[in-house]
Image (cartoon, rainbow over all chains, first blue to last red):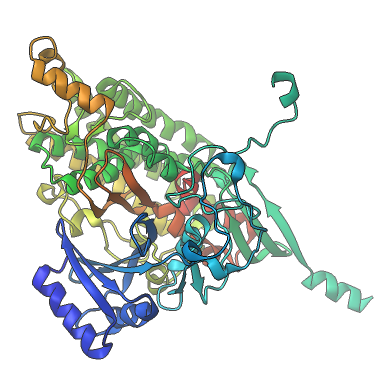
Length: 196
Length: 396
């Protein structure tokens, strides 16, 4: 991990090359994180990967967390690793929820019966979007698909952004915090009527 | 007629393998394009054992999450526990006592041997070496006996707790473990005697499934697969966790990165693991096996009938669980399959707001296409075995 002053140095250097790209830094529990502007995330990741003094060439993990009720609510996390210096650095891009202020939005998870079912392949305009980093880190391919699958975060430019773990006709983004636990219909119901 | 023959020679056939197929080491479906017997393209389709464990974890208090995460990668359950417990300990800033560190190291390395034994048995079975399965599972059973002796369960032991381990090792455990550790290198030598100069095994593994080191790194592959390609990257050496900084062990690496190297690296790792266990036993410090912070750790059973305060703590911990201040931590360890990372997001309540596992099998599986394309379909099955994915971990 870079320490807290080291993190500020990195921030300063990125700001020199990409002004306005780093919104904030956080150094918490010994882990350093850059909170970046989602529109410039590729510039920051590319800089961290290729800048001779940095060389964070290994993307350990890409995952999304839902910070509901905070706004912007989705955090896309990139856990970068410099294997020579054995340092980890987290890059975090916060995305708002475009559907939050959209018309006709009913609060999900009120009760299970009211699951609004947008048609499969419905317009993705009400989903949060960010650029895909597959070009920079090939390992992100499956992990971005997973993030899309569970949070509905669209990675622009991803070669094959489809559901990966859930069935392709699944409706909803189940790892969002406002998606209720349980209520999945059981597929094997051929003798359901016998048991009510 | 000539045209027809040509068509037949270049005909591409799409074959579906799985999801239920013994050689897929779990519920993995492969859509394979074949030209004759040669794999032209393939696509792994996963998700058949997705059980929503990460989502379920958000609905459980911190200490109740442990048995859930154990069931992700069901062959290396101690590693899941360590990744999760370690992440929570870093979130709350809880230092675990030295004895717990050593005990955890012992059980992690036992689990590594266990996991590699399952891998060796099943993969050798794929290559036709049926007797290997029985020999490997014989030793695996001794490890499971040790787990049962210490934790009461053979699999999914729930032995690691936030703050340490649930119980100290019982009397006689050390003796039994020492006898196992003394036997294991001999057994590994016997496996090597059976396989290393086995004509069929060699011709099936040498030069098969090569992916370059650079490409593996791009694809995020870690663990024995990466080390077999010559990259000495091991989180046990790189990062400081548990008792590994005090241990003297080597990182086996390969040269070519073919299936034979993958086999050699894993087999050598088993021997290194026995060295770590032996050193941990020699250095095992006396003292408590779990931290003494009553806000996070259950009080000893004996205090419950005499101390009201302990009873209250016990009640609070069992009913609501402990609360964790808002924050997020990513903690990664070296599992038998590579970098196992656990991300935990705390929102101040007694339940984690997000638990994410960076499962090594899930990431490593991306390299499978490049390992298998251009090889025979039979070698594809061998490469899959050498990749060693655990689909419970892939799908979570």
